Length: 636
Image (cartoon, rainbow, N blue to C red):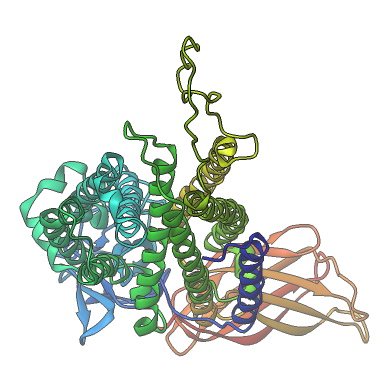
C-alpha cells in the first residue's frame, strides 16, 4: 500500500477518471444485441382470423427458451384447454415452442397464454388471440403483470438478496484471513462472520432450489415440496447450478475450521490454502454466472469469466470491509488490536478489488445497456444510473479510508522507529554515596544517597501516551469511514441484485426492434375524387395502422383542391379481397369533426385489398372511388 496521503487520494480519483473515459467510449459505440428472451412472432399471428382451424400453434422467441408442461396453453372461447400435449421445440430450434391442437375446433376467438424461461434463467410470459372462422367473445382468463409479482416471485427475490449477502460475507472474511491477517482466524467475531456467511448462503440456496419450480411455472408455494417438480428443476440449468452450489458449500463446511487450526498450532497459512480458497470462491461465483445474464446474449465466453471476477471482487471488497469494521470495533480482554500492517494490506487488496469491480462493471454495462439513450429510457438503465452514483460515492469514501490508513501506517512506523531507539539511550549511571549515621531512610524508588528517580522531561517516557492517543484517533477516523464505505457497499449490493432480476436494456431494445420489423409502418393511400363542380377535384387520404393482419386503426381526411381540409356530410369505407372472395368489410367510419376514424377494423388475411371509398359531398351528390393496399402479417 502507498503510505503517502496525497497518493492515496489521487490514485482512486485517477482510476475514476479512466473509468469515465472508458465508459463513454464503450457506450458511445454500442449497438443492439440479444439478452432476455422476447416473443418475436407466432403462427397464427396475433389477431389473425383464419378460415380453417390450425393444427398447431407455434411461438418464436429472440433467444433459446425452456418450458414445462403448462408453458403454452391454448384456451377456447369457453376457457377450456384445447392443446392436450405440452409444448415441444420445432425441428430442434431452442428458440421455438409448438403445441398441437385438438382435432376439431369450433368457431370463435382462442387465447394463447404462454410462460417460458429465457436462457438467463428469468421467466417471461404473455398472451395473444386468434380467431377460427369469425371473432367471438371469450371467457378465457389470463394472468397479467410481471412474472415476479407473485408471492413465490417475491419470496424468491428475497432469498436472492440473502444469497448474495452470504457470498459476500463468506468470500470477504476468508480473503481477509488468508491475505491480510491470518491471526484473525482465532478471533471469535471473525469466525462467527464466516459461519454466518456459510449459513446464509446455504439456507438461501436450499430455499431457491425449492422455490425454483413454482417460480418458473407460476405455481403455488405448496408445490415447492413436490418431488416431481424438484426433479424437473434439477435437470434445468438454474436448478443444476444451485445443486452444484450446495455441493461446494458442503465441502466448505468440512474445511472451514482448517485456517483457524493452522493458525492456532502455529503452522501458519500456506500458499496452497490461498489457491484452494481462490478456487473454491471462483467455483461458487460460476454457479451465478452460468445461470444468469452472463450466460445469454453476446460474447458469452467472455461475459461468464467477467461476471465471475465481478462477483469475487464484490465479495472480497464488501465482506472484507465488514470484517475490518468488526476488528476495528473490537478490543479484546487481552488488549490485542488489529495491527496497522494488516489494515495496510487490506487497503491494497480493497483497492484492487474496487478496480476490478469498476472495470468488469463497465463491460457488463456496455453489454447489457447498449446505448446512452437506454440509460434514461429503460428500467435497467435507470437502475444502473443509481448504481453508478452509489459506486462514485463508494470511491470517494474509499479515498478517505485510504487517507486514514496511510496516517495510521505512518504513525505505526514512527512508533516502531522510536521503540527501536529506546534501548540505545544510556541509562543514568548510579553512584554509591556513603550514608552517614542517622541519615534519613531513602524514599521509595530512591537510591540511597540520591534523589528519587524520575525520567527527565525530555526523555522518551514522557511522550509514551501521545502516540497511543494519536493512534486511537486515527483508528476512530478509519472506523467511521469504513462504516460509511460498508453501508454504501450494501446499497451497491442491493442495486446489483435488483439489476440481475431486471430485463437488460439490450433486451428491451432488441424486442422493440423485432416488433418494429414485424409490424410495418402505417399504410397511407391517397385517392383523388370529383367534388361535383368544374375543375374541383379533391383527395381523400386513408391511413391504416399498422397495416397488417389483425386489428387496425383507420383514419380518413378529405382535402380540397388547394390542400385545405374539406368537410363532407358522409364518408364510407369498405374493403374486399377479390382473390379470396372476402368482403366487403365495412370500416364503420365515424365523424370526429375534422377527420373520420375507426379503431377496431379487423383484417383476417394478408394480401392485396381493394379500398371502396364513398364520399358524399352534398345532400344529393356522392362519388365512389377505389384503390388498393397491401396488408402483411407477422412472420410465423
